[in-house]
Length: 376
Image (cartoon, rainbow, N blue to C red; front, side, top):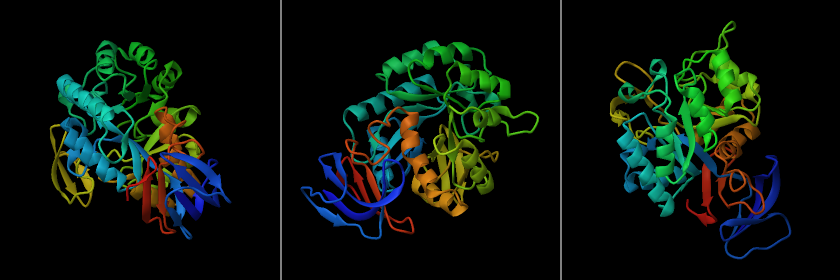
């Protein structure tokens, strides 16, 4: 396959007029003056960027990770690929241990025998090791203190496919949990009441990620910076941002992207099963969620995930004034790095998997290529 005459976001994330050759599922050439077998596409006037990577998504298209069925993950993968998301981490919630186990086993099975659509990279385990005071849209019945022994059982049961696990570092058992879990996967600060000192200590001990920065944690204060301030202050921590313009005000998003810089921001959808569907009443982790004008809330008014997708968030951020290069890095190479997949996906480089998204100048989706195959 040969893609010609497009503006390509190259390995340095600079747009340049060039061609891309794909053989099988691998990018074999980036440049000009070469040929390739198979179809050729003249993409004059288009932009080619790496396939989008969503490492925090509970559900979409009417399905949820915790449904624990092949149908659910298959429908999610199909919906996501149509939005330019070529890889994702199905994300569990604070549900019973039995339900977490079922979800993990189902994801493992689907990774061994992949459904069509977006590639499953592994599991993002959000909960149950969170603060009851900051549970947000998670169900309080199953919130518990960090339990490394239980997590190790989950990890082993899954065959080691857990890529991220959340923790509130102020809770009893957190230190032992961080010490053990950080040897197995990335550990993320989330749903936490931690102050600046507690968050800073957690980062020092092995936490390298922050789940949906600003949401389900104390706000940034000028005398008590909190977990948000600790994340800004630590140059090694990556931070997720939900960029639907509802979870975080556009002005705060602009500020966060400036402070965190190009290499630490990760766009996530944190979407629930209502994503891609009409307003109505839906289930999230055993709780009733009302979606009105695309905004998902529990009966008490608590925000309960999103109904957005990565492509919508990219358009939002560009409209808010965040530089295009920064936005695309945050939707591709940065999330890939956050889950240890950046050597294989996340950028347009020779030898990497051919996951490519073709956009027009208005950021409308024109073509999606996943594993070297045209899927949209």
